[in-house]
Image (tube, rainbow, N blue to C red; front, side, top):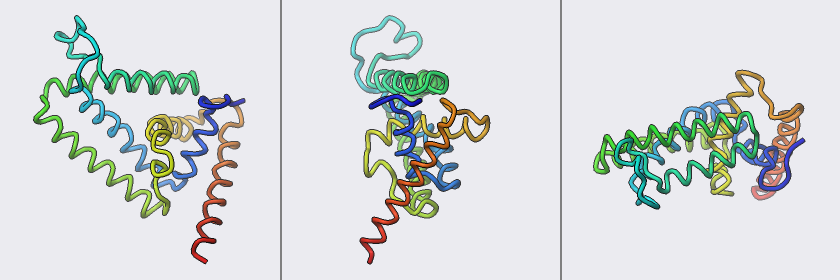
Length: 196
């Protein structure tokens, strides 16, 4: 059974899934969401550290906004689902470490250009996915925080379900699909009333 409130994985997944039901749009998001997270962490490397850290100089890891965002995502994902959330948390930490190392190597003057190009490419792909294939505005227009926070976990959970049949608990995907179908029907009905 799902959790209640902030950690209700079924509710979060149904919200995000209602905006991502087209298989092509889902594939586009699987390809572009994690690179958006990674390049965001590259840029966040250049935010000031919260405190001096002895391993900063040797490894290039800085306790700053990048680490804070990574930890928030990682903890949130583990609270949503221990197994898939732990995998997502490890991937987030790997993105932070590798993004920090890349940022240190590139330096700010080159890193922001690489990040800008990657972000423009990935966001354009996602907006095309929504406009051409999904035919619905992205979730971030209705709930920015939830969409941004859930996107990496959503695509990971979608991949785990598609390739391995993973479910956080028995009946999860059937329950989410019913909620997604109801949400899409409600959206189409509302959209139909506005155009008529």
